[in-house]
Amino acid sequence: MSDLFHSRVRPFSITNQLSAAEMVERMAGTAFQARNLAQAVHIWDRMLRDEVTIFFGLAGAMVPAGMRPVIAYLIENRLIDCLVSTGANLFHDVYETLGKPHWQGSPESDDVELGRRRINRFYDVLAPETDFSAAEEFVVNFSLSLDPGRPYTTREYLYLLGRALAPVAQEEGILTAAAKHGVPVYSPALGDSVHGLAIAAGRVRAGQRLLFDIIGDVLETAHIAVSAQGTGVIYLGGGTPKNFIQQAEVASYIYSRELPGHKYAIQVTMDQPQWGGLSGCTFEEAQSWRKIAPDANTVTVNVEVTVALPLIVSALAEGSAEAIKARRRPTISFEGMRGA
Image (tube, rainbow, N blue to C red; front, side):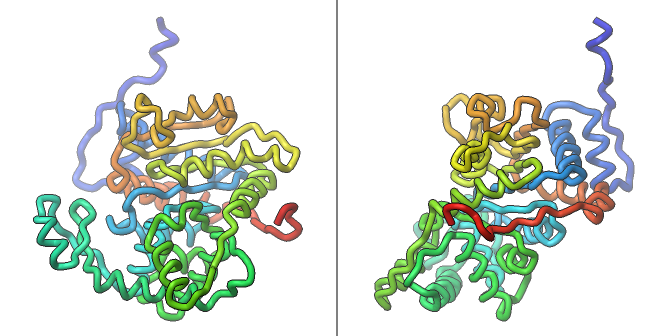
């Protein structure tokens, strides 16, 4: 029995001054999701100190909820090396980068009235369609400036969009930061967003058939995994970004390699595994697919992302400052990539 009693629960004590890093350390001595959140900080810190390439999956309405500067911070300070996102988050990023705000509302709003007034609701967040239309028009005009004579990977498209945004940006965004700091961004379901609508509008308006090389995205992310010393993954929510990153290690067979699976894995999600969906897929289940290494450092934090993410990143910014500064950032290159 004595081997079970190696770490006692340390009750959380209150003081009138407590930093984010100190709070998380106190949470580490407790239980349930407070302990899991602290474990996420510890695993992320280990990734920063190890020679691994860190993939980051972004789902849910995180940008409308105010998380854009947090994601931009991760990119600017290279706490992540590759971002895979829903198209919706990246359109809201364009919207905010152009200076258009999201507004606090109420989940009890009269949605029929909101629809009549052309106001879109995301739970307790509002955005007027007039501002949406202005941001969409920027994307339409950008897409019409591209060469329709060849397909683009979503990484290429989003990099060029980040560069196009930079001169007119009112605030630093995810795409502008990624273009500036050389962090590749993928959106394998780009059409499922206003980006898709804007590109479609450009086709109808000008007849331009802008095409995307989604298989190029698959090959590139597999190449990143094959070229890395090891990989770690962080998922906010699930959906397409999560599984697209999960398969990167398995896809190594395309390059006649067999990788052991992601070495580190963190997910912050409210999804549950018993419904059989990939968003709720446990890391243990992923090990049966060899997506996660058998000896991987993993944790699932069952906390709503807008509660967990600011606390986790604030704790890292303070407690892992030296590791962030000293980190040997992997160089990601697609030069000479087979199948490109």
